[in-house]
Length: 212
Image 1 (cartoon, rainbow, N blue to C red):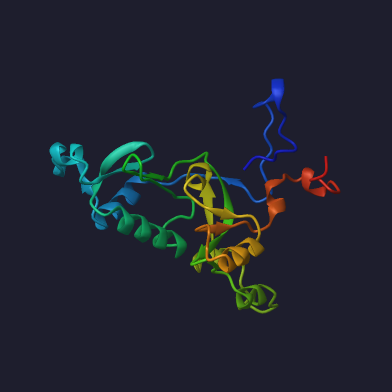
Image 2: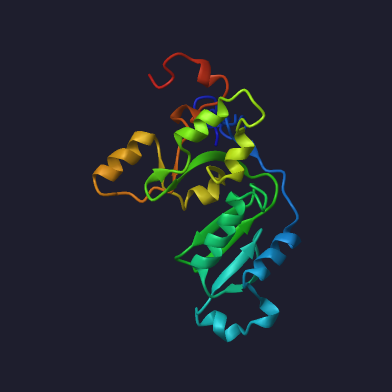
């Protein structure tokens, strides 16, 4: 999210921050409309749920922007459904989905000020984006695919810092191929668009920036 070359360490740490090339800051959205969507997917309000069942650990707690809004009895189904909505562009791309298995929590964030960056989506060890999509981006007609189309088709999605903690990101596309040949040692969920995207604008034009 933050360029490692341009962001100072030591006494100046925190005073100067330069975003990575494709990172952006979320502008936020209305939480109430998203909560109503969660209720449509079976999230029970706290007022309709007995505390004894929550304490027994039968359900997972559902949070929106840090506020406990309800519970759900099938965390896998809820996370999968909301991710599908985000990847089909039916809900804003800025919404963050964090599943905390250890604490039995699912946290959603729709607020502003979160730094996010795009990543390729990986399904069953393979990229969702294919050569036909790349070719469509090079078309000179009205049917050409742009970056927003990759979001709507579920090929790329934005992750913030907290959701990155729950993702397994491959550095190169070749890592996916090696992983497949070794019978999938790692369960990759995303892949970097390019390793140089970790750098900021100024650092990216330095020759051999990875050499000390």
